[in-house]
Image (cartoon, rainbow, N blue to C red; front, top):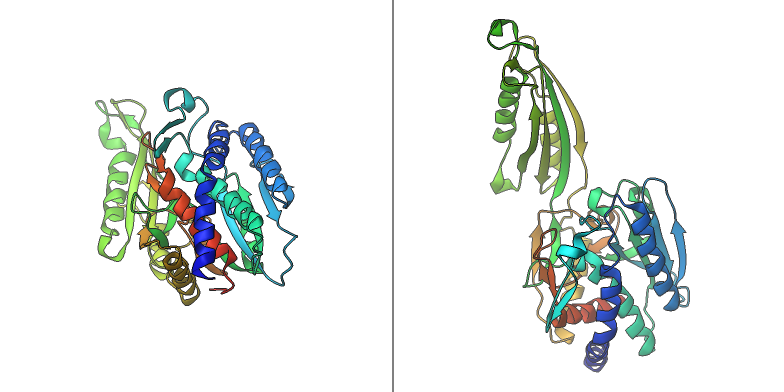
Length: 385
């Protein structure tokens, strides 16, 4: 792609600033927490109509477990091979959040629930295709877009569909939010695991016959200590006991205690070893028993050759757009972690901002439009990466 084409792309993207803002506001104002299927379907209807307007054939893969997934194909592009842009419509914010955290725009800053993670990314996909159409530039690879509605809770319902599409495409661009105000692109993501661990002991009156009891809480304290010893921050391994419940009353030796554990790791082998260690946990107190449920969830997104080639292609496109980009490691997962197992994937291609999952969520408009220009350039690049 020539520098003249790149300048046209960047200028045309910024010429659509008002269009971008209006489309983003429409999506943000439809609150869409993952577990509210009705609200998510309402948003997916709007998104589907907007992709059809851009010339996509849209298939809605409905489900009773989630609001389903949209698969949009730009059949006007004739190509033997496809490329995928993937994102999610669901957010972590419950219905009613807009009352305390309304849409607002103050010069270059836009705020609102889900604006950063990742409704801006959905609009960026549409803007990339819209600008390519208006400039009459045909992508070398046929664009396919997938919009899911359960990413924030682990993509259980959409996982198989994501895998199938990933196996069939040459590359995947993921407009999940970039990293912070520097807008780093995510060339690595940690893998994750989630566990529910239950310890059962024996209840007894803590004053009359405490010796007849077996404290599930004391045993769980031993378990938590063992979990803590598995942490190795230098190797990117972290375990967090985020929730704990147990006991009935202060004067009863507790007969049951449970915890929720979050695991993050950098490479497959570490994840597998830690998973085995957690599954092998044993009790220390006589009369206590342990049950471990759960396991590894999203795999890590790693710096393999195909992902690195795509990152290098992004750097080339950025140079032609007169943009500077950097790469980074994210501790969180995304659907890019799934696609990366099968094809070249570049994640964090979305909005520049900060505050995902927090009341400070925001994007920087002009910087996000620059990133939309980069997404467009990559979409049009004839190098597979």
